[in-house]
Length: 326
Figure (cartoon, helix red, strand yellow):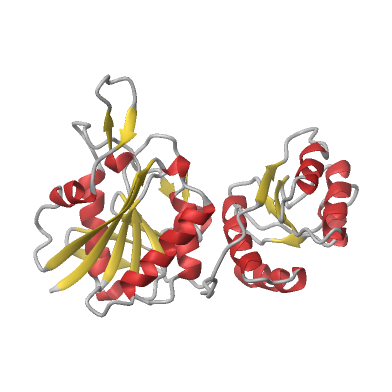
């Protein structure tokens, strides 16, 4: 019999209306989530670990790091064949990518959740848990890294993002595409992720700012971050990774002070590449900024937190981003 550990962290899947009925709060225990599982899950035993019970908008990098460490602990047990993590959808992709970078086992790690609360008449949580458990228990899922399983599809943690605020099929992998799907008892794998690497980190660096550029952006926020203890800055630039001239100048000052500046794009798809001058990507790369390939800003921030936590210098970080940015 396969044995899967269900780690619960809260989120909409564990939420219901409070006594006054005026808001939804995460309050359902892991044992109650397990009770929603029905056939056909015969042959799979499920253990429960109540890690925390919060909305994922309250998740932070240190807690996501602790969650990845907890996953590693469970997977190190010979009797554990895989892990499912229930998590709020708002930051699921970031916690999943943290786990993808830090989990050392090749056993399946599957994140899932819900877009509808646990007390909704048409709740989507029980089905998502059941399918995630089936995926985690499948020998075919080994070596795929951390995944997000939602609405029968499962995605690589590196590529997936929440694409819609409330639709139940919110998770998408853009131009990379899903890893596969679950059709009843069948786990169908259509591709395997390539841009993966595991790190052994004893700590992370949470003081990393993510700044999204918009028309007319100036250097104010970057200079504030420099003056207030940030250890790295992730820029969501325009297009191929461009900035305004004042932002490029501030980025140069940050790098000169030993603060890595990592360039991503605010576009949903495509890679950053230094092409333009006058504040564009060419100026940023001349200033020493690190270009993150097609990693989106939130995931570049997760990777940077791990690399800085390991004590890597700017040149070493550049090599890691070049390898994992695609």
